[in-house]
Structure formats: structure tokens, C-alpha cells
Length: 81
Image (cartoon, rainbow, N blue to C red):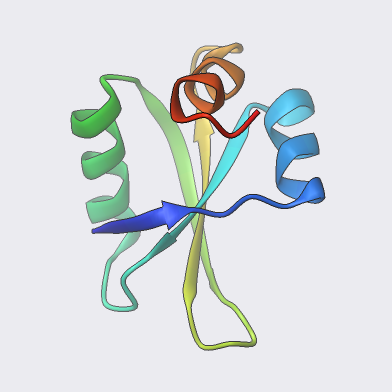
């Protein structure tokens, strides 16, 4: 389950340059679950998902999209920038 988008200066740069968005997800979510949820929720194709634990104990998912402009379009729809 996606909790919220993770918005930082670095995350914004990744969205613009590398077609990636970052989300905070539940700690017990797998990469496959995150991928399926993103695809179903936003109706986009996901190329890959990487996950990591933050120093605060939260799980961050870095999502790479297939279409080159998906990250910026999705960020605009979500009101991130």
C-alpha cells in the first residue's frame, strides 16, 4: 500500500532526468506488490521498482516508468510540481 509520495529536491531531479518517482510504502510490501499497485492506481506501465529502508525506519520505493514522460506527468497530476 502506498502511503504517500516522497518529495525532495533529489526526488524532483530524478523525476525530471531519469523518469523515476519515489513513494513511501508499507514496510511489508514487496517490489511486485508496489509495481502492481502503481500500475492499477495510476494506469501506467512500470519498468522496475527498487526499495530501501530509510534511516527513520520507513520503506521507500523508487519506481521507474516505461514511457519517458510518465514521471513528470504523474507528478503534475499529484500536485508535486
